[in-house]
Length: 257
Image (tube, rainbow, N blue to C red; front, side, top):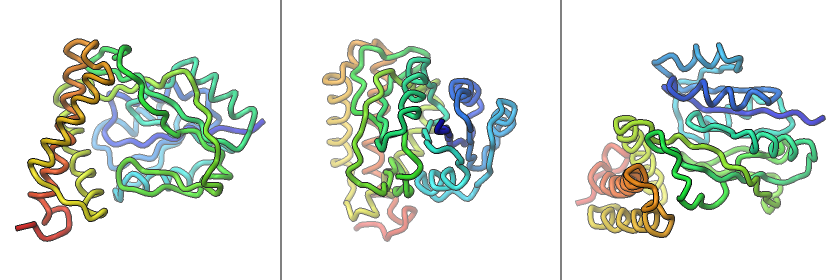
């Protein structure tokens, strides 16, 4: 039978890691690559039976994913974030795809869980490529929202119907810390692409993001948790363009006049 590795990236995920790794326990190898956690993440991951490797020199998400590939032994690999939980139905679908062992990419969709409430009325969005045959996966590129490089670029995708629970926002404080991290990474990515920032551009991006999520993705049906989730995502959109305009020195390029 083909074997499966489930690979998790961590940094200060003590609140999330136990539930995450318990949901991944069906894999032949559960692998954690940690980026200089200062809380109990590493100890908890080892106690849960995961193989833990320490790579504190953060170089972006793609670099950390590629380090996971170096340590993975499975014929197939599923990439799981530390704030995610594999549902029982999704576990069965992953195992079935591995058993068939066809050259394809498995896509999953999120159910967002914000401030303890599953946002079940929100549209789940497009599928995220997470399950890969190792023989096809060459590596990843990108500082944030990294993308896979495949030996066969037009490899077919198969949707795995059961959702992945994404505990993206447990508290307001944790959400603001995450907002700052992703706004900074998003600004660096756009700087590398030669894009320009600005407060007005950020306001436009934030407004478009909020309307898309709150109205068209039905966040309005999810109460205060749905509003806060959509508003925080919109703030991230604003601050990445504000940082691109105001913090260009810190991002690696002289500030625009």
